[in-house]
Image 1: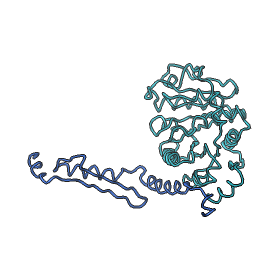
Image 2: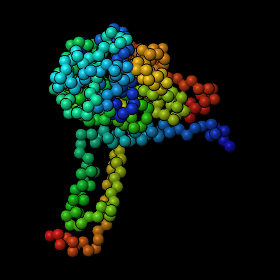
Image 3: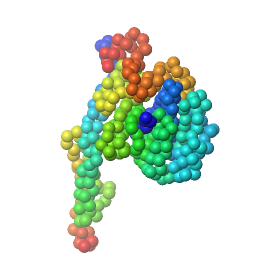
Image 4: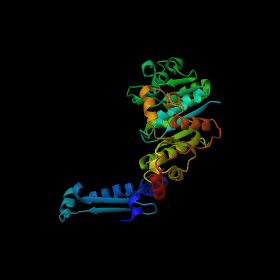
Length: 90
Length: 271
């Protein structure tokens, strides 16, 4: 057994520092700005909701806020009979 | 000239009230006239930590709404002649605190005291903003732990935008007070180090308060730690922080790891 490894404890402070640096860089940029990702999510769902009755259980949204790039994934299961619903609603 | 100081953090439970009492008592001990003001409406605790819980008659809201005059609500500390407390209300009616009303009370306190120390509630809501609103300087209390550091960053942003000084384009002095610091754990790399926290928050350091039983003992008996055990490490750290607040230059004491040799050899390497 590696003696050094035996005595060395798993250090978590570097992970804490790194996570904070990334998160705070993002939050500082976003300060006093509308949450673009949040606005996009709401508007996209609203547009789709005009045409399709959205089942909340069939909507998967993932957001990943990074330091330079963020991603928004909207995964909506649209039933094939949506046209009928849309016509019925119109 | 009077200085209005807000003790704030964003996160709860990091030691705002303890620090308010300890710094207030340390400043008053040097003869400065100090009033500590509890802004935590509905959850007041500064009276308890100061040992004045049985002497509260009127509170900040009573003064703001005109039910009581300021001198009626101020409670003089039994140990220090120059230390006073303005308690918060225990009622849930937070809306009774208006910006103008608080402003008038702070102005009146400025006339009578050298230091007006405002103990902020946790959070970033109205109460926290009112507590910092009229401050000249801020003490940001931070634990070396991710959620506390994140919230401190948020509060620092608010100090730079929501205070009256910031709105007038003036500079608000910000001081970082690291509390509950455990040197052994930091040395072993289990806890964010002072350097980590300073680098992330880039705010000048006011002091490092080591984690200590003395702090709990002090609150148990309702005496600020700087009075109950003035020679203990946390009390010394608070006393030095108070000296720095007064503009004195005091060498920073970084709490040392007092663990054994083995721990030292292997712990430091890991850090």
